[in-house]
Length: 320
Image (cartoon, rainbow, N blue to C red; front, side, top):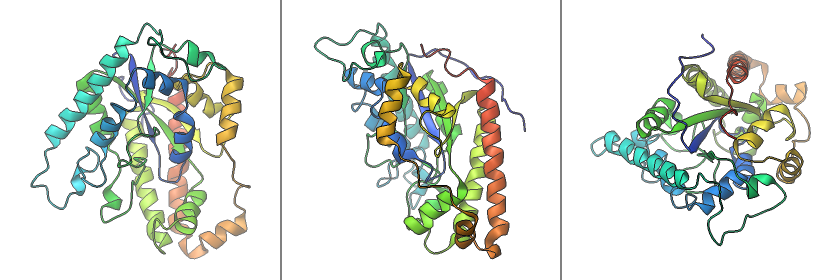
Protein backbone atom coordinates (compact mmCIF):
# COMPACT_ATOMS: atom_id res chain seq x y z
CA UNK A 1 0.00 0.00 0.00
CA UNK A 2 1.12 3.60 -0.48
CA UNK A 3 3.08 5.05 2.40
CA UNK A 4 1.54 8.49 2.01
CA UNK A 5 -2.06 9.35 1.28
CA UNK A 6 -2.88 12.64 -0.51
CA UNK A 7 -2.10 15.59 1.76
CA UNK A 8 -5.15 16.95 3.52
CA UNK A 9 -5.85 20.60 4.21
CA UNK A 10 -3.71 22.25 6.89
CA UNK A 11 -5.50 24.95 8.89
CA UNK A 12 -2.62 26.21 11.09
CA UNK A 13 -5.03 26.17 14.02
CA UNK A 14 -3.67 27.33 17.41
CA UNK A 15 -5.07 24.15 18.97
CA UNK A 16 -3.61 20.87 17.70
CA UNK A 17 -5.60 17.73 18.57
CA UNK A 18 -3.48 14.60 19.01
CA UNK A 19 -5.00 11.10 19.13
CA UNK A 20 -2.99 8.11 20.35
CA UNK A 21 -3.85 5.07 18.23
CA UNK A 22 -3.01 1.72 19.81
CA UNK A 23 -4.26 -1.65 20.96
CA UNK A 24 -5.26 -1.98 24.60
CA UNK A 25 -2.28 -2.78 26.79
CA UNK A 26 0.17 -0.68 24.74
CA UNK A 27 0.65 2.14 27.25
CA UNK A 28 -2.26 4.58 27.29
CA UNK A 29 -2.28 4.61 31.11
CA UNK A 30 1.45 5.31 31.28
CA UNK A 31 1.14 8.14 28.79
CA UNK A 32 -1.67 9.71 30.82
CA UNK A 33 0.66 9.96 33.79
CA UNK A 34 3.30 11.73 31.69
CA UNK A 35 1.33 13.85 29.23
CA UNK A 36 -1.09 15.20 31.84
CA UNK A 37 1.88 16.98 33.47
CA UNK A 38 3.22 18.46 30.22
CA UNK A 39 3.78 22.20 29.61
CA UNK A 40 1.14 22.10 26.85
CA UNK A 41 -1.47 20.71 29.25
CA UNK A 42 -0.47 23.29 31.87
CA UNK A 43 -1.25 25.90 29.22
CA UNK A 44 -4.63 24.27 28.56
CA UNK A 45 -5.45 24.62 32.25
CA UNK A 46 -4.43 28.27 32.27
CA UNK A 47 -6.74 28.98 29.32
CA UNK A 48 -9.58 27.07 31.08
CA UNK A 49 -9.71 24.53 28.28
CA UNK A 50 -8.79 21.66 30.58
CA UNK A 51 -11.09 20.51 32.25
CA UNK A 52 -13.90 22.83 31.09
CA UNK A 53 -13.85 21.59 27.52
CA UNK A 54 -11.70 18.45 27.58
CA UNK A 55 -14.28 16.46 29.53
CA UNK A 56 -17.05 17.26 26.99
CA UNK A 57 -14.57 16.55 24.18
CA UNK A 58 -13.77 13.06 25.42
CA UNK A 59 -17.41 12.26 26.13
CA UNK A 60 -18.43 13.46 22.66
CA UNK A 61 -16.14 10.73 21.31
CA UNK A 62 -16.92 7.99 23.84
CA UNK A 63 -19.33 7.75 26.76
CA UNK A 64 -19.37 4.19 28.02
CA UNK A 65 -22.48 4.31 30.21
CA UNK A 66 -24.77 6.36 27.95
CA UNK A 67 -23.21 5.08 24.70
CA UNK A 68 -23.67 8.49 23.12
CA UNK A 69 -20.14 9.13 21.85
CA UNK A 70 -19.32 9.18 18.16
CA UNK A 71 -17.07 6.13 18.61
CA UNK A 72 -19.58 3.97 20.51
CA UNK A 73 -23.15 5.11 19.73
CA UNK A 74 -23.48 1.92 17.63
CA UNK A 75 -23.22 -0.04 20.91
CA UNK A 76 -26.74 1.02 21.92
CA UNK A 77 -29.21 -1.87 21.99
CA UNK A 78 -31.21 -0.20 19.22
CA UNK A 79 -30.55 2.59 16.72
CA UNK A 80 -34.05 4.00 17.26
CA UNK A 81 -32.75 6.95 19.30
CA UNK A 82 -29.32 7.31 17.71
CA UNK A 83 -28.64 10.58 15.92
CA UNK A 84 -25.12 10.48 14.51
CA UNK A 85 -25.56 13.83 12.78
CA UNK A 86 -26.31 15.55 16.07
CA UNK A 87 -23.46 13.75 17.84
CA UNK A 88 -20.99 14.79 15.17
CA UNK A 89 -22.19 18.40 15.26
CA UNK A 90 -21.75 18.46 19.02
CA UNK A 91 -18.16 17.27 18.62
CA UNK A 92 -17.48 19.85 15.92
CA UNK A 93 -18.75 22.67 18.14
CA UNK A 94 -16.51 21.55 21.01
CA UNK A 95 -13.48 21.48 18.71
CA UNK A 96 -14.36 25.00 17.52
CA UNK A 97 -14.75 26.28 21.09
CA UNK A 98 -11.39 24.86 22.12
CA UNK A 99 -9.70 26.38 19.10
CA UNK A 100 -11.25 29.78 19.71
CA UNK A 101 -10.14 29.74 23.33
CA UNK A 102 -6.65 28.68 22.27
CA UNK A 103 -6.55 31.50 19.73
CA UNK A 104 -7.24 34.00 22.50
CA UNK A 105 -4.03 32.84 24.16
CA UNK A 106 -1.77 32.94 21.11
CA UNK A 107 0.24 35.85 22.50
CA UNK A 108 1.78 33.27 24.87
CA UNK A 109 1.43 35.54 27.88
CA UNK A 110 0.25 33.86 31.05
CA UNK A 111 -3.21 35.02 32.19
CA UNK A 112 -3.09 37.71 34.85
CA UNK A 113 -2.41 36.30 38.30
CA UNK A 114 -1.46 32.86 36.95
CA UNK A 115 1.95 31.41 37.78
CA UNK A 116 3.58 28.59 35.80
CA UNK A 117 3.38 25.24 37.53
CA UNK A 118 7.13 24.73 37.25
CA UNK A 119 10.14 26.81 36.23
CA UNK A 120 12.66 24.07 35.44
CA UNK A 121 11.66 24.02 31.77
CA UNK A 122 11.17 26.95 29.41
CA UNK A 123 8.11 25.18 28.06
CA UNK A 124 6.22 26.21 31.20
CA UNK A 125 7.40 29.83 31.31
CA UNK A 126 7.47 30.52 27.55
CA UNK A 127 4.96 28.12 25.99
CA UNK A 128 4.79 27.33 22.29
CA UNK A 129 2.28 29.12 20.08
CA UNK A 130 0.49 25.90 19.20
CA UNK A 131 -1.38 24.19 22.06
CA UNK A 132 -1.22 20.43 21.53
CA UNK A 133 -4.15 18.67 23.17
CA UNK A 134 -3.74 14.91 23.85
CA UNK A 135 -7.29 13.68 23.33
CA UNK A 136 -7.19 10.19 24.83
CA UNK A 137 -4.11 10.37 27.08
CA UNK A 138 -5.47 13.21 29.17
CA UNK A 139 -6.96 12.61 32.61
CA UNK A 140 -10.39 14.20 32.11
CA UNK A 141 -13.64 12.21 31.81
CA UNK A 142 -14.10 9.02 33.83
CA UNK A 143 -16.58 7.74 31.23
CA UNK A 144 -14.37 7.62 28.15
CA UNK A 145 -11.66 5.11 29.00
CA UNK A 146 -8.47 5.10 26.93
CA UNK A 147 -10.22 4.94 23.54
CA UNK A 148 -7.91 2.06 22.75
CA UNK A 149 -8.55 -0.79 20.29
CA UNK A 150 -10.77 -2.19 21.82
CA UNK A 151 -12.12 0.06 24.57
CA UNK A 152 -13.83 -1.39 27.67
CA UNK A 153 -15.44 -4.82 28.18
CA UNK A 154 -19.02 -5.88 27.57
CA UNK A 155 -21.14 -7.27 24.76
CA UNK A 156 -19.95 -4.61 22.29
CA UNK A 157 -16.25 -5.08 23.04
CA UNK A 158 -15.30 -6.40 19.60
CA UNK A 159 -16.89 -3.38 17.88
CA UNK A 160 -15.91 -0.81 20.50
CA UNK A 161 -12.93 1.00 18.99
CA UNK A 162 -12.19 4.39 17.40
CA UNK A 163 -12.99 5.20 13.77
CA UNK A 164 -10.47 7.71 12.41
CA UNK A 165 -12.76 8.51 9.48
CA UNK A 166 -15.30 9.93 11.93
CA UNK A 167 -12.57 11.75 13.88
CA UNK A 168 -10.95 13.43 10.90
CA UNK A 169 -14.31 14.30 9.32
CA UNK A 170 -15.19 16.25 12.48
CA UNK A 171 -11.78 17.96 12.48
CA UNK A 172 -12.28 19.12 8.90
CA UNK A 173 -15.75 20.43 9.64
CA UNK A 174 -14.33 22.37 12.60
CA UNK A 175 -11.35 23.51 10.47
CA UNK A 176 -8.82 22.47 13.08
CA UNK A 177 -5.62 20.45 12.73
CA UNK A 178 -5.75 16.91 14.06
CA UNK A 179 -3.00 14.31 14.03
CA UNK A 180 -2.17 10.93 15.53
CA UNK A 181 0.62 8.97 17.20
CA UNK A 182 0.78 5.19 16.88
CA UNK A 183 1.79 3.38 20.07
CA UNK A 184 2.73 -0.28 20.08
CA UNK A 185 4.13 -3.07 22.24
CA UNK A 186 5.34 -6.64 21.82
CA UNK A 187 2.17 -8.68 21.08
CA UNK A 188 3.24 -11.37 23.56
CA UNK A 189 3.46 -8.73 26.28
CA UNK A 190 0.00 -7.43 25.33
CA UNK A 191 -1.46 -10.94 25.44
CA UNK A 192 0.10 -11.64 28.83
CA UNK A 193 -1.11 -8.29 30.18
CA UNK A 194 -4.71 -8.80 29.05
CA UNK A 195 -5.17 -12.54 29.62
CA UNK A 196 -2.83 -13.44 32.52
CA UNK A 197 -2.32 -10.21 34.47
CA UNK A 198 -5.84 -8.90 33.76
CA UNK A 199 -9.02 -10.70 32.73
CA UNK A 200 -9.86 -8.78 29.56
CA UNK A 201 -10.42 -11.85 27.39
CA UNK A 202 -11.62 -14.62 29.67
CA UNK A 203 -9.75 -17.89 29.24
CA UNK A 204 -9.75 -17.86 25.45
CA UNK A 205 -6.31 -16.78 24.26
CA UNK A 206 -7.06 -17.80 20.70
CA UNK A 207 -10.08 -15.49 20.53
CA UNK A 208 -7.97 -12.70 22.03
CA UNK A 209 -5.22 -13.21 19.45
CA UNK A 210 -7.75 -13.10 16.63
CA UNK A 211 -9.39 -9.95 18.03
CA UNK A 212 -6.06 -8.15 18.34
CA UNK A 213 -4.95 -9.28 14.87
CA UNK A 214 -8.18 -7.94 13.37
CA UNK A 215 -7.83 -4.60 15.16
CA UNK A 216 -4.13 -4.45 14.22
CA UNK A 217 -5.23 -4.62 10.58
CA UNK A 218 -7.83 -1.90 11.21
CA UNK A 219 -5.09 0.33 12.64
CA UNK A 220 -2.86 -0.33 9.62
CA UNK A 221 -5.69 0.64 7.27
CA UNK A 222 -6.34 3.84 9.22
CA UNK A 223 -2.64 4.77 9.20
CA UNK A 224 -2.58 4.22 5.44
CA UNK A 225 -5.69 6.37 4.91
CA UNK A 226 -4.34 9.26 7.00
CA UNK A 227 -0.60 8.86 6.54
CA UNK A 228 0.05 12.61 6.38
CA UNK A 229 -1.38 12.86 9.92
CA UNK A 230 1.18 10.50 11.48
CA UNK A 231 3.41 12.45 13.89
CA UNK A 232 4.89 9.64 15.94
CA UNK A 233 5.49 5.91 16.37
CA UNK A 234 6.22 4.87 19.93
CA UNK A 235 7.27 1.50 21.23
CA UNK A 236 6.28 1.45 24.87
CA UNK A 237 9.23 -0.75 25.87
CA UNK A 238 11.71 1.90 24.71
CA UNK A 239 13.57 4.00 27.25
CA UNK A 240 12.11 7.52 27.79
CA UNK A 241 15.20 9.08 26.24
CA UNK A 242 14.87 6.95 23.12
CA UNK A 243 14.27 8.37 19.67
CA UNK A 244 10.53 7.88 19.63
CA UNK A 245 10.04 9.51 23.07
CA UNK A 246 11.14 12.75 21.43
CA UNK A 247 7.64 12.76 19.95
CA UNK A 248 6.09 13.38 23.36
CA UNK A 249 8.68 16.01 24.28
CA UNK A 250 8.19 17.98 21.06
CA UNK A 251 4.41 17.68 20.82
CA UNK A 252 3.62 18.63 24.38
CA UNK A 253 5.99 21.49 25.01
CA UNK A 254 9.06 20.34 26.92
CA UNK A 255 11.99 22.41 25.64
CA UNK A 256 14.67 21.11 28.00
CA UNK A 257 15.59 17.51 27.20
CA UNK A 258 17.25 17.00 30.58
CA UNK A 259 14.23 18.10 32.62
CA UNK A 260 11.98 15.98 30.41
CA UNK A 261 14.10 12.88 30.92
CA UNK A 262 14.27 13.44 34.67
CA UNK A 263 10.50 13.76 34.84
CA UNK A 264 9.70 10.74 32.66
CA UNK A 265 12.07 8.50 34.60
CA UNK A 266 9.97 9.21 37.70
CA UNK A 267 6.86 7.96 35.85
CA UNK A 268 8.35 5.32 33.58
CA UNK A 269 9.39 1.84 34.59
CA UNK A 270 10.60 -0.85 32.26
CA UNK A 271 9.39 -4.44 32.68
CA UNK A 272 12.01 -6.71 34.21
CA UNK A 273 13.09 -8.04 30.80
CA UNK A 274 11.70 -9.17 27.47
CA UNK A 275 9.91 -12.50 27.60
CA UNK A 276 12.12 -15.52 26.97
CA UNK A 277 11.33 -18.06 24.27
CA UNK A 278 10.24 -20.49 26.95
CA UNK A 279 7.86 -17.92 28.47
CA UNK A 280 6.45 -17.16 25.03
CA UNK A 281 5.85 -20.85 24.36
CA UNK A 282 4.17 -21.30 27.73
CA UNK A 283 1.90 -18.34 26.99
CA UNK A 284 1.15 -19.35 23.39
CA UNK A 285 1.67 -23.11 22.88
CA UNK A 286 2.51 -24.51 19.43
CA UNK A 287 -1.15 -25.37 18.84
CA UNK A 288 -1.97 -21.62 18.74
CA UNK A 289 1.09 -20.44 16.84
CA UNK A 290 -0.60 -20.15 13.43
CA UNK A 291 -2.83 -17.36 14.75
CA UNK A 292 -0.01 -15.75 16.74
CA UNK A 293 2.28 -15.67 13.70
CA UNK A 294 -0.44 -13.83 11.79
CA UNK A 295 -0.64 -11.18 14.53
CA UNK A 296 3.14 -10.81 14.64
CA UNK A 297 3.27 -10.21 10.87
CA UNK A 298 0.52 -7.60 11.10
CA UNK A 299 2.31 -5.97 14.06
CA UNK A 300 5.65 -5.76 12.24
CA UNK A 301 4.08 -4.40 9.05
CA UNK A 302 2.22 -1.69 10.97
CA UNK A 303 5.39 -0.50 12.71
CA UNK A 304 7.25 -0.37 9.41
CA UNK A 305 4.40 1.56 7.80
CA UNK A 306 4.23 4.07 10.65
CA UNK A 307 7.97 4.67 10.75
CA UNK A 308 8.08 5.31 7.01
CA UNK A 309 5.27 7.85 7.35
CA UNK A 310 6.90 9.54 10.34
CA UNK A 311 10.21 9.91 8.53
CA UNK A 312 8.57 11.39 5.44
CA UNK A 313 6.37 13.82 7.36
CA UNK A 314 7.74 16.90 9.12
CA UNK A 315 5.66 16.62 12.32
CA UNK A 316 7.30 19.24 14.53
CA UNK A 317 7.95 22.07 12.08
CA UNK A 318 4.84 24.09 12.97
CA UNK A 319 4.87 23.54 16.73
CA UNK A 320 7.40 26.22 17.70
